[in-house]
Length: 120
Image (tube, rainbow, N blue to C red; front, side, top):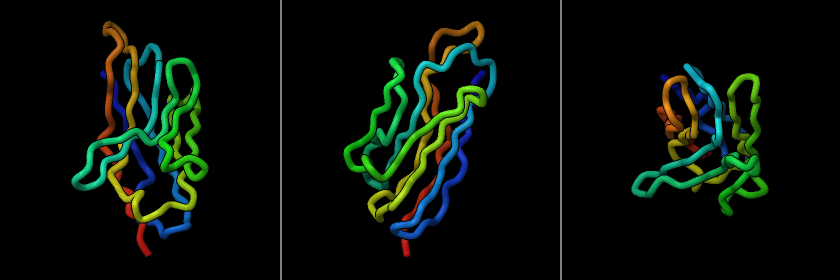
């Protein structure tokens, strides 16, 4: 069993900063990809930033230059540093991972989501 747990969401002012964390735990053998998605009310879930299987990082055009993702492999944790957030960044942010667990193949896992609200 693998769990992804996000933390760090909340209310942030436009132009401020916020850091999200996502820790993977459980019977993990390998993490192939891990990153962040978000879903705003009435919209589809979309990619924000993610480390790919090849080790590169992808960002949504709307967050390039403002958001940065990083990871701590020893802790199976990824972070999303949100600088200069805008009101349109308000959404539930989800952590996602492609992870191989003990006695299982590679599965796709989601965290429970953390609300980020950008408002003054």
